[in-house]
Image 1: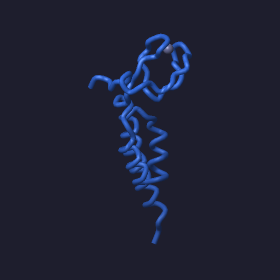
Image 2: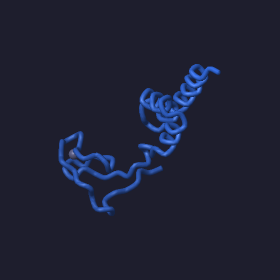
Image 3: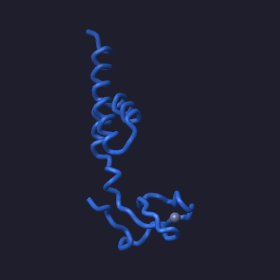
Amino acid sequence: MTVGYEYVFIALMFGIATGIIGRAKGGSFFVWLIVGSILPGLGLIAVFLMRNEDNEPERQCDNCGKILKLYVQVCPRCGYDLYLPPPEQTRMPPQ
Ligand SMILES: [Zn+2]
């Protein structure tokens, strides 16, 4: 009984599926291709659970007013250090 070839084929199928979903969610196709190939099934579950970038809460930079994702810690426009704002200052992007 040979294991290698079928396993590689299935892993690659999982990898490609994971990569496509990862890319659709704003991630890197190749990163998710590798994750999905190394961890067939698990990688696919991980990419399904990954939150879509567009659904991340947003807030405004205190210094320049640029709209940033909540997890951004330094404003890329003005370099201002950002701390987690109070909940009432965050909002979900319009759908
Ligand atoms: Zn700023």
